[in-house]
Length: 330
Length: 287
Image (cartoon, rainbow over all chains, first blue to last red; front, side):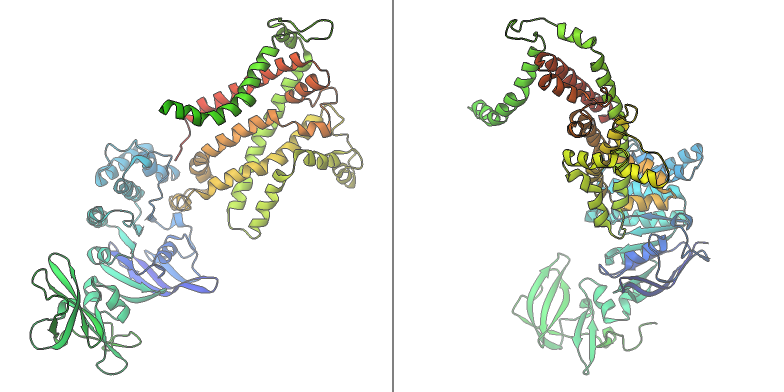
């Protein structure tokens, strides 16, 4: 039992609220991603769950136990830092075992856990090295091994992949997801990268300026964005937002829903982004920019006029305050 | 051609080093092998006779012993104090800038000024220490006049003077250590002391080595305060090697014996530096 519940969490610094009344729950053995732009408060929330910051108001419970004022070491959480926070003067093995030694785990037990963890993340043969002689991906694995041997029910990850190159990032995404399932961890994962959020999460909590914009499983966030912010933040390229149909409203259309054939409204092709499998067309429609997806080859050229249309059910209507008209929650 | 340019580039530094370091060292060693000259009997080569004389000189042995005590008294204390002060002002605390400045102030003062301040502290009866002692009914004491307390008094003053300087190096090193290391250790259940012993102190070892070498060199080099406070007295109880060399050369005008003592000082410093590098360097983690 290690479900996390965050209730009305607030963190103020000098009167400015970095986290402003945030509530969500993370079910047992699931992975929740805190997603948002930099400065949205997602890392602060993670640190509040870990106990590295003190909440100004609100409550954090883990497995039904109120941990809001509890010492970080007694919360039953382990954490992977963006910088990995490896101890540079210790070997890989010493780094992994540091916490177990502090907690006075028996030597035989330590050796067993080290071996299991090293095998799980593929660190065999590197245990005597110092962090400085490891690649970024290997350091990341040491940080993961450190959380594995801790055998804590909750694992917190603070942008763990942002220092890796794109190829390694994709690999590590799979690996972290696999570990989370294999070990039955309850995981909170902070990122600003929507790809990580969409591919890994059981549920996403989308944050903006210290508040929750929307939370739910990834398809829900993509298919029914609750706010104009959510609509623009999730999806690559982002959703088109056009003025209208009535004053004070916005119409959102995903680029893949924009059809280029048939008899729609005329739009001028301003520029092309050729991506191989597809081409993004940047069009000017009555003075507003709109992006459409087209096949990789044979797309219209800049300067040409095309006709654009979209099915009525692909429209998302927002008030100009950003709130979805037909209600964000399903 | 490239060799010529290489040598030309080396020349300015080489000239300075030869003129002010290597030549004087060579001359000192040479001088120590000659007798003291006077108008009637000119200086002549006497081999190691000056060294034999030195081995029989009780003041030399006392000065050497004093210097060992002075080093043992000042080095660990000033380094420990420096580290404690650095840890203290590395944290977010109100008036941090003021505390940093206060700790560093003794470093900016010239040693002569420091000695004058402490002369006032140590003066019997009217000095600060005796006045405070008098308030709580303790008798006055001639701290600098008593052979049993004079070296201790000078050690205390030197620690006060040096710790702030070493603190700056520790503070600079502490600022390069990412705060996540403490957070990671804390999540693993490490107490502050465990973190200090297992993580922070080992990471500060390069700084400690640097500070240690400086502290050892200073304990042999820094004698300005003796001119103000004690002139090595009473009865050589606070005399240190370098001050003894100065006295021998410029008060007794025995330049060849002063040269002999200088060779010993150079050997002591060379051996100490070598030991530190050889012994400590292997155990230190450099980033």
